[in-house]
Image (cartoon, rainbow, N blue to C red; front, top):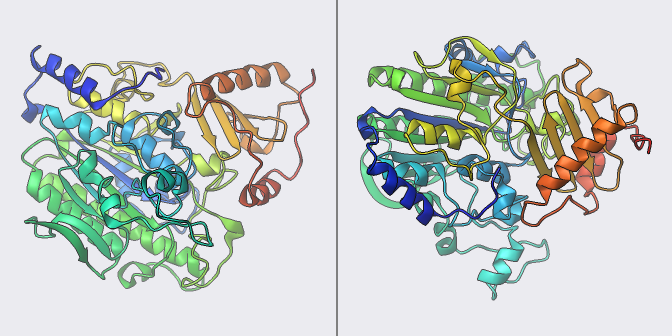
Length: 491
């Protein structure tokens, strides 16, 4: 890993060098689609084989035609930081981002769209973005909006002009249809026509709207290399019961579970439509697609509250068989469904057990575009690992830092650090997973992993392991999932 600063200017110099050394024609380069669900738990694809009530035939077929990663990870158990890591290919803490209040994504950060643009790619962003300044960005507001004072709830109002400075257009995207539910800031419409950039309203089920926008983007750009970043705002709350999908599920199940399954079925239907469009345009075999989630499901003790209440509660999704949930660096918070599909290029029906990360998408995009190896990226190009060109595990270790937590996974071993508590050590190669703490019985291994974790955190902004006291949510979660305080390692 390389933590040196990296700028768009440096990227342009590298691309100029590439262009003078005989890069392949842009038209021959593969397309890339990244589909990101929101708060989708590990269990909520049928192909995961965990929950019998899931209905995802298109995503199951997707996996059968490509690769299913059993140890796919996101870089944070929360949306904004995990999205920052994915879109840049760097641990987001290198950019000073640990949590949502640390937004916006700096304009100096190089996104996948900016990386691909000079090589002839057109990029489009659809759905949730969440990398612009938000109401929780008190530190940013203090510097950039000095007249804006936080209200009693410690929130600030971000003017639209300030939001727009950090929206997808400012981060390299040519096309955008950005929004979460019924309001979208777009420069094209659902017929594929150019329109003046402005906010537009669409009251239909949000997943269907976002799929329609993706299909319009494909209609506009299927004849040229493209990168499509499709961010479904589902099954994140507020939950919906779209009739066309809810009809597949019995009314006897918990209401929130039925709503989540209905929304996931909507995502699945959308993926099926996208696969069909790729075939219709004749580009199915020239398009690599990744499908994953921005973090694990927020379980909240599976409380089945009314859909129009408890906005931050259970989204009806499940993390079976993992321990933990959204907000935790336990597996349930960061280990997510992850699929890849590229017919004729990567094996069909392959199950890949080595740990991989959403950080790898940017490095893989680098390879697709024929760019030189980028040592500043924290991810790796997955294609050689999937095609047999490289049989080694993609990563020596993966790392996380969030709130008062930090973690490292090295092979089958995982160390979970919690400020104010003894370290926990788990063997993820066993069925016990994170249900048996081995720190006391393997102190040397725990100590070695702690040292590596500490060394990694020293490369971040700000450096070091978290020392903050755990917040209320963390206290609740850790008491629920780890009721016994771990025993400190023997000196």
